[in-house]
Length: 386
Image (cartoon, rainbow, N blue to C red; front, side, top):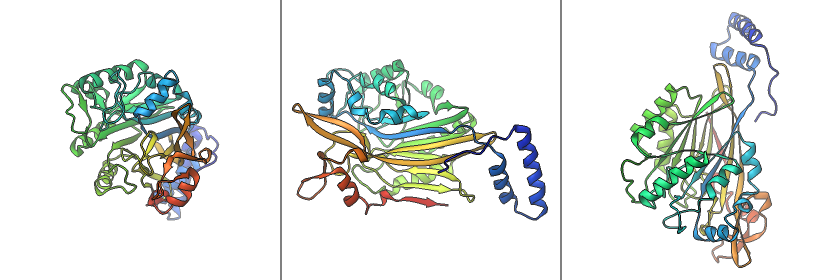
């Protein structure tokens, strides 16, 4: 990760320097690729970086709904520790794993979250919500219709679910521009829990033929970077499966720069792939786990926050840096109700109901859980691949 950027060189000066260095290094027999890489590093001045922050699944189980209702549907206490990072990013992205079908609000297995959650997520800094997931069809037409209406009315960008083929054609891939950098978002799901999505509504599926067409469309529309947000994998499994791996390779071959996964509700492996000159070429995160949930299963209270910074200068563009942070859904019983808090790992050291991983079911402190239980899992090593 770079800690500073080179000083700006005026455009004319950059052209002159590039020609000068090309003549010098070519004359001494340096390879064209080596010469181009060096010229780029010496003469290209990065613009301000554009920071993307990714979170995993935002869920609304029954106990979360009771918690929110008791607070007058004020979600700020739950998200408070994450709000500074969400608002500081140029763009924050998360998977919204529920419908907004109105009252009665319901949790698992068919979700309908309180309406106030959406405008508050926007207020907290979320800029893109992903809607292609296995629960988007839980409440039928009412859930599809109201969810899209509320998403549009709050002004938060969203993708994955559409009212019709015509709307999909107009609005997909989702193109977001920040500081002159155009970022295309793809979002697909493996299924919808057996619920049929009634026409004319459409939910993107993991269809390789369609995905290849969508990638080409993003390229034609001038996307500088393409992000594929995939809803895939096996629930509660720390290890990604062969299907996820094959799809990730397919997406990279066709021009995707970043593949970010959701659905397993636990964190899975991450990989960074590099250009020969050492710059980051591609980012792969098989699953970010949950941002917030009430799931009781092992590892489902641990998630990841990713920050990826991008730069562009003229025709030159690259992934500038990649960092990750562990987050925890901490449960605390207050006033007879279970309260939910999303905390950075270092703030979640207490023994709590939310971390139960020993065979006897005894609670373990969150930090102790991460240090002693998960390091043996491959999820904790970022693999560097050329």
